[in-house]
Image (cartoon, rainbow, N blue to C red):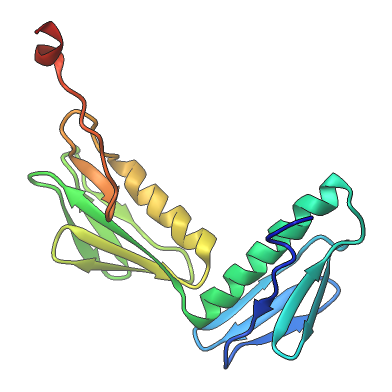
Length: 180
């Protein structure tokens, strides 16, 4: 029995869902998302509540049951509230600038790194060392935040780099600490 797949999804006010044979479209105050799911999994909406069910207890159906419910819940949350990831630049000389819709990172490389967001995702710079990635698609927001962090991940010896807000970076002792 899938604990996640059996949980109902409540539709907030202002969110509409259209269930078709090929997929699902969710419309809300922040935008519209569409996705297609496994045809074996049944998606039903009644009275502002979405229920996901599977035809059998085969392992493939069990896996798609929970996945479908999670993706639908993320779509509903995205069009009603949106998703957000915050990143921080830590280190002397590490800074970021807003350039149109994109950002320019100066992170002690021989060149500046320019990043442009995909459709539906926005980048905002706060101060000169904080980045806010926001949008309605959870996967796109998380992917862009991961790509920005990958430009200069936190150094384990100094702690410098790009990290998620609130991320703890454990600092290793250097060579001199090992000799003692």
